[in-house]
Length: 385
Ligand SMILES: Cc1ncc(COP(=O)(O)O)c(C=O)c1O
Image 1 (cartoon, rainbow, N blue to C red):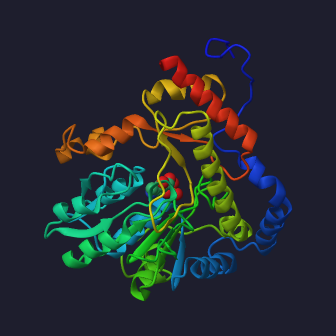
Image 2: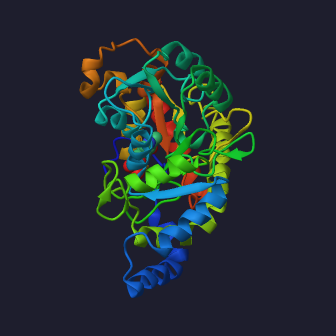
Image 3: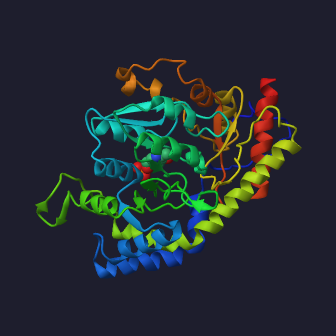
């Protein structure tokens, strides 16, 4: 590393954005035991591990049905397919999320209708949803961004007035609560991701559709098996959206730790908040706001900073992991140009895309590492001043 970005005498450390090894070490034996159990059974497709995980997750989330699928993306896709969303339909969603939220709508031939975010939480603005609903609207898809629930009461009220279902994109928010209840069970369906960086991460891809609606659960189960309840008797056209038994076995080892890990993430978030105060950065770094009635699980701890790209480059120079979720809102993506949105149309999302910066917040992060991260952020801002 060059000394270019370093304050003379400053200490040196390395803090990754995410350290999956630190999570794996203490549970390694239990994971290997579970993997061996699947190998010895030679049952890799659905079967007892997937069924066991589905039971355990339904209980954890407080929903009637949980259907394991191949990814968070496929959870969204299958839920939308189950609703029969297709050409001529519209789906209202936030312009500020991970690509899959909108990509699934387009893949089905429907039109994603984007709305702006609330500037404080970065979650979809319920008032803007109401204005975007038309007779062609077939679903509303709020995203519980970074691990904090969207404004569900207001969103469900708009949806109920419009007579359309809500599909929660809860990919980043397993365990997050809204007025004491876990997200994913408020809408008709909740879609979760087990991508390795999520709070409950598999050893590869995985996802889940949670629902209290029996017909929707049956439909997603059918869709994940190419649309057949009985092999080779296809009632609808589905896909291969199954969750692997090996992934389910790994997730079953991790699930009992999930609450403790989320608690550690919350503790880390509170530490950052205090450190930004201590370093006198409160006016220049805006820490994430936890809104009333929300149990945030901090899949990401996202601050707002001026001159974000420069701050991020400085963090990288000083070997501190940082990431931008997300640099381009959907309405400004090349692949959605034909939808006819223009720059400036959703100013809150556009500003967030310029200012948001995610800092390491994983459960095993130490207080000293966090202090180092804040020292380096302070150093970057001093340089800019
Ligand atoms: C908000 C959101 N939606 C959907 C997804 C898609 O999940 P996956 O990567 O498991 O397909 C992700 C995660 O990457 C996400 O963060």
